[in-house]
Length: 228
Image (cartoon, rainbow, N blue to C red; front, side):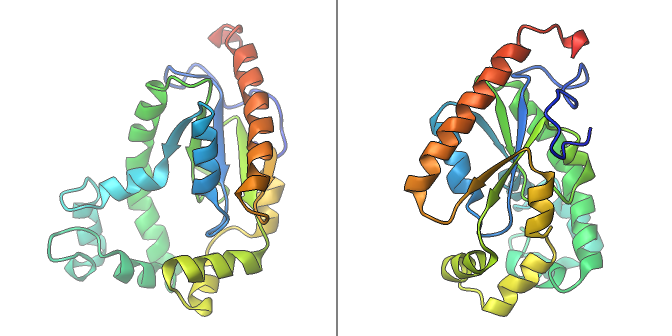
């Protein structure tokens, strides 16, 4: 399905695993506050599936991705313990688009099954997949019914990441240059949360969308799966 501004139920079909039927894709650029917003939804009862956490589990020592990473990039991108050397890989992929695509080609297929397994065991009214590269990934955009973009000014993204990660401005901008633009994320979104005024301003936005998503999920639960 194409979820650009479309409010129908495309993307929710009998091929999806069991569990809550409404699947939301939460995305945003680096420093936009995805984790903060996701945790607010979780506090209201949403089930979170964080693809970054899944990817991290794949790249620890002995992780499912590590043999392929070593084959593709060499042992010098591994720590002495055999985990992914994140600093070295970050420097590589954000200066080499082909390397970034190669790493994503390794990780993305490995993420799908654990993500679906987590969604299948969900107990919330709906599942929220936290997917930083959702807009860039045709696969993920077709696996959710709605796209929620977390938005803030680009200058604020830079300032937050510099403070949080200790990176230089040029490094942050290089990372941002590899991601979808702010305009592309907003164009892809069904829903938008603005995150530039602190957590107090986030709470009412999250509460309103939680009500909407819960209502949609409740309505969908009355429709036979073969009619969706």
